[in-house]
Length: 346
Ligand SMILES: Nc1ncnc2c1ncn2[C@@H]1O[C@H](COP(=O)(O)OP(=O)(O)O)[C@@H](O)[C@H]1O
Ligand SMILES: CC(=O)N[C@@H](CCC(=O)OP(=O)(O)O)C(=O)O
Image 1 (cartoon, protein in one colour):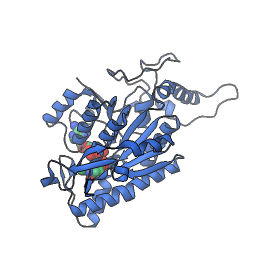
Image 2 (cartoon, protein in one colour):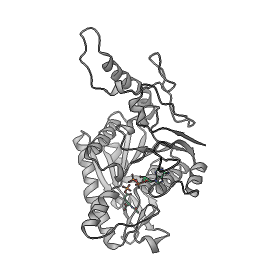
Image 3 (spheres, protein in one colour):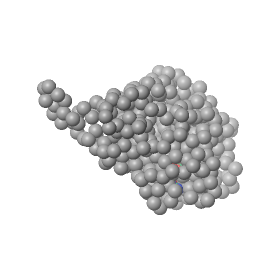
Image 4 (tube, helix red, strand yellow):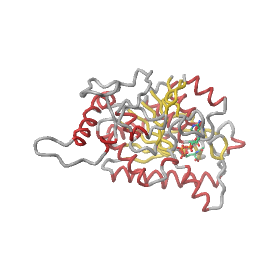
C-alpha cells in the first residue's frame, strides 16, 4: 500500500486536522473527544494552538490559552498508553545542523522522559564528520549511503561522534533539565561489530553482530536518558563505523522498544525524491522493498528503510521516518494521532 499527502508543515498552518490513514493497531485513538468539530483523531494542532498565550480575563481564559490546555489535556491518553515504554529515537546529522533545532529536539525528548516514557537517543553526525575530515584534507566518500572508512577516517569518526557530538547532546539534555549518560557501542560491549560484507570497498564500516543492552537497563531505570554514538569494536578491539540508523534499529529490537523513530532532514520517504510534496504517509514492508528495488529510495534513505524493516521483523511495534526540521515533530508523532512522516508497517 502506498499513500501520499502534502508536506507535513501544513499541519502547523492549517486549522483543519490532517487525517492519517491508520492501519496499525498500535496507533491509538484518544479515549474521548472533548470538543465539537474535532477530527477523527481527536487532536487538532492549529496555528492558534501554537500561538503565544494571550492575557486572560479574570473570569474566562482567552481562547488561545484554552487551546493550549486542550492540546495538553488530549495528550493524556497517549501519555497513558506509552508510559513506561521504551522509544528509540535516532537523531541524524542532517537534522542537527541548526543549534536552535537541536535544542528544540532535545527539549521534546526531555518532555517525553518527564511524562514517563523511556527515550533512548541514538545519534549520527555525518555532516560534522564531513566537516572535520575536510580539516584534515580528506574528501568524504559514500557508497549506498555508507561512508567509505579508511583508518584515518575511522579515527576522525570516533573522535567526532564519541568525543564531540555525543557530549554535546548530553550537555543539551542537562541544560533542558534532565540527565543523560553518553556512551558508544564499545561501552560494556553494547554493540559488537564485524566488517561489512562489502569491506573491500567500505573499509572499517561495520555491521552489528550482537547487541548487549544490559548496560542500558540500570541507566534507564535510574531515569537517565542513554545517548549512544554508534562506534563499536570487534572481538579484537578493532573499531568500526556503524551507520547510526542501522545501530538504532538493532538497539530498538534488543530493547523490545515500542517505537523506533528516525529523525532526518526530509519529510519522510518521498515517492519522487525531487518532489517534497510526494510524501509516502504509510507503506508496508513489501512496498518499501519495491521502492528500493525500483531505485526510488537511494542514498542515506536506504539504511533507514532497511533498519526499519529489520526492527519490525524483530518485534518493534512501529517504525517511522520523520522530519527533524519540523518543530516538535517528535511530540506530534508520539503524543498525537496526526503522524508527521512515513510509518512503515509490518
Ligand atoms: N525516496 C526518498 N525519499 C526521501 N529521501 C530520499 C529518498 N531517496 C534518497 N533520499 C535521500 O536520503 C536523505 C536522508 O538520509 P541522510 O542524509 O543519511 O540523513 P541523516 O543524516 O538524517 O541520517 C535525504 O536527504 C535524501 O537526499
Ligand atoms: C557507515 C556510516 O556511514 N556511518 C556514519 C555514522 C554516522 C551517521 O550515521 O550519521 P548520520 O545519521 O548523520 O548520517 C557516517 O560515518 O557518517
